[in-house]
Length: 243
Image 1: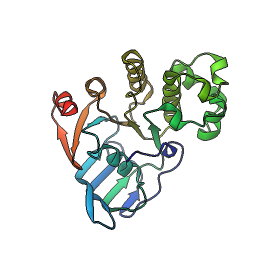
Image 2: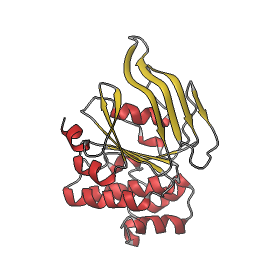
Image 3: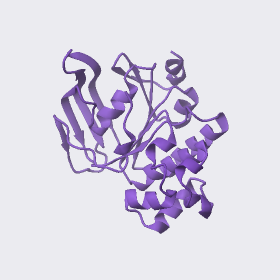
């Protein structure tokens, strides 16, 4: 299951058992307690989270095999799930919007609307702010700002997706395998962008199979296996990614 990139510009709705509260300094941005996502008809548990709290400034890298529940965890953080799934437990969040960087940057963008124009329309940011953020992601050519995403390279599309996430000013930014479609040089550039453009008080959660991503970004590391979360000590992310 993958997270729908349309989460980026839109508010995350309240889920059953969920609440949106005001944010206090040093308080968690989002907390999951006794959270469980299951298939309604089969009552099969897909994800189980006894307790997880994410704080301002956290850089969380989530690793695990394909199908382990990484993307399901991202969906649970947003408060949205596919039809046929049921959430039980407690989800308390201090935000009403989420930024999202998908595996393919184009999935976060309208393919046929000029880049700067659509970033302005989707996020409500001023044209000057859009230009500023695009420059910060390395997209400095004004002609590129007028270009449709389908006319851009894969690396440029990924940079544009990072710009979109940043322009949402969302307290929580999620990235689902954001570098898996990139070569190593472009991957490293995108990682530097994520580190540089995400504010100190924002939470960044990245799901990945790439050990280099885990080692470069993480202040916290979470492994997911068969829908069960384990927070890892430093130095074990590469082992879990390979596992």
